[in-house]
Length: 124
Length: 170
Image (cartoon, rainbow over the protein chains, first blue to last red):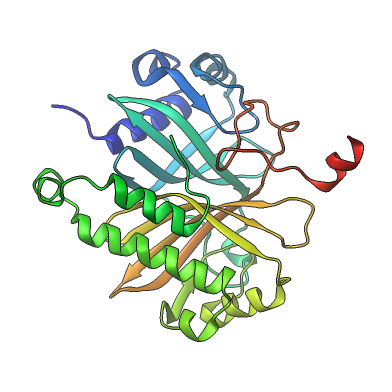
């Protein structure tokens, strides 16, 4: 059965940042993969090279919304920076592969320290 | 891929791309008409509050029981509206990529003109209930200039921001 775009993106995130499996790049990243994150070089090979170095990283996905060729996922990266980072990752999917990526990342503020008292992130 | 940098442009682009409605109904589990309504609601609400600063109209889009999860915004609808009132009138919000299902909308956007050294790139997540905004999460990050970017692709839209110190340095 063909995987949905949401399933593909959640598998890409899991295998890249939880399993740290660099073979995910060959399977699910387009050769034309365009990177908009400002701290990662362009292209799929930068991801394949980065994955084995992320030994301190854990990732937790939250809500995911798919619409047309786009999938956006709320998540938390622990071990990417000095503090846990809350993120929204945006992927464009074309023919079963991720071909473009944007993200927004912010240091997590605990619920006790937000003005509303609510958590910035809840894992799914 | 094209990016709408203003709400009007984005809507026009999306509606021009909208494929045959009936085929979408049969191909997707999510009701496309609700998906589109939810996106339209968020784009109109954000333009009304952040760009037009029409608080009376904005009250029709935001629930009085609005639940805030943002790291820096005071609770409730009043907390959000008071924040906007405290930001310089030069504030501008530009929506970019946007996705929705029947409950949630996530929009990529840029806040500029806040009197800060850098623009903010945002991912705003809204929960919609009965046609109004009832809950919000966000992630905010300073927008990188071209010099600051390793990927050499803009974080948002199709061009990099040029900040004042860079202009002066040349």
